[in-house]
Image (cartoon, rainbow, N blue to C red; front, top):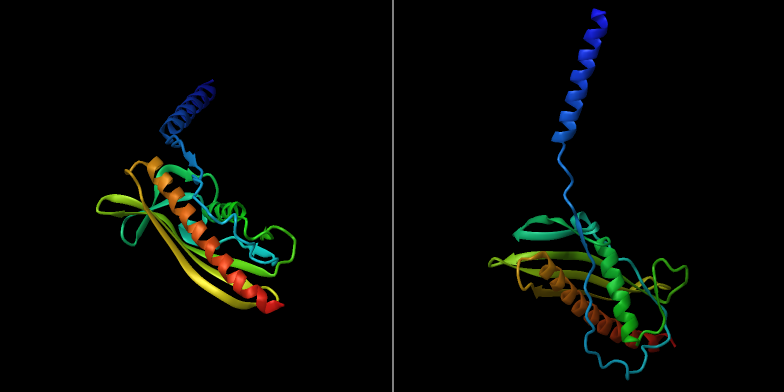
Length: 212
């Protein structure tokens, strides 16, 4: 009988300890997801001639470290990257950038044969890139969105590098609130995408006649 009472007390103490441990476990903080905002930029390209009949493949931008995930990176102090707590992008950062570039090319319309890396089709040219910055940086206590993309245009047949360029855009946020910071990212991405489209069209226009 005494053995049963001892066992029951041990079981009760164990149960109380387990409940206490469960109570002390920190609750997970809610996470807000943000897509990359987009605004229609003024364009006068629609009346211009297409950039030849070459097929362009848009590769997924490569990224490393914090830029390879969905965390929203902030650099409050130079060389000390951190992430916003309780906020994430709706997709991985390279995917967001790739999708924004695809939208920009399609809305521009001068490159009529555009595919991305997931499409099992051959292409004449390939646009590869490295995402070097996609972060909020503080200057004088005010955040600004910074996007930096190193781009290479490659002839897929000869594997020759035709051209390369670094694109950088900065957009100050209206406040330190994460919503305004996300809006700043959207504006910077829109401008960078349009600048990249213009550059790519110029390169393809100069390249195509040499292939005839």
